[in-house]
Amino acid sequence: MRRLFVVCIPVGMLLAVPALCPADRPIESRDKATHVIVGRVTEVCAEEAPTGANRNYIVEIVVEKAERGDSLKLGDTFYASVYMANPKALEGKKLSDKEMKAFLLTVDGGYKAIPKKDDRVRVFVKHARGKYTGIYPNWMDVLGQDGPTKTTSLEVR
Image (cartoon, rainbow, N blue to C red; front, top):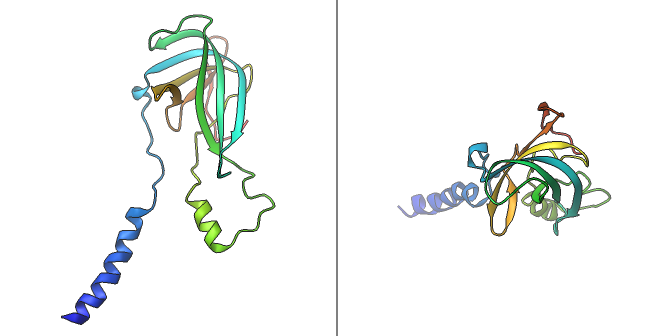
């Protein structure tokens, strides 16, 4: 009986480890957006996250139309927060195995795309904790003058 106990405890501990590891962020439906805004991007500001694994973006948009959500009207300035993996996070760094494992736990694929300045976009965001955050991961469409010309892509702009 003691042998069975000695074997089962370590095996049980090993099976519990994946439950302790953070999972990728769940995909959100655009239906969950509290606001859907059409407008023109006037600024895109990037900031390295403290760990360096992700790059945070604030996208400034001048509102042309609010398709969903209240209190926004033509000409208002709107700010959306999103992030992407930092492609240069490990550039020039030598990490030990332990440091690499710790770093990889902080990496998340991030949103599918970031618009560039002067793009006309439709964004799907939710309001929470005092800011607007993009619906993950497919939060925006780049539009032409009269409608969609392309959907989001995996490229970083």
